Length: 111
Image (cartoon, rainbow, N blue to C red):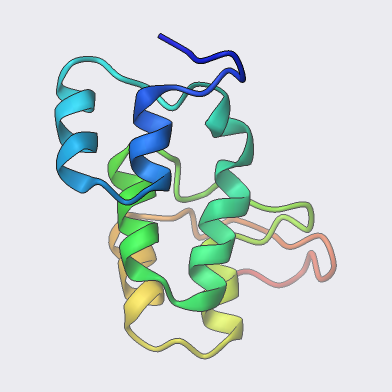
């Protein structure tokens, strides 16, 4: 089910941080719908600001932690570049991001 803007109930629950509702909606087959289009942006914002709860919420709702922004940076790239030790860096590593993700600016740099 989608609203007139293409949003789904699960996307709204994720956006408004209603974790119990997201768990229920996933158990009933809910999906993020068009919100998958900006999932990379949301992941990267969480990594850059060390928002572990947002990163966890996105990954638990089937967002690939290897999704990258326009420069091919992942949440892990941004967490590492902001020197977030533990927190988002640790959570991203726990969810097996690919060690072979390259950045557009410095393609020789592996994370």
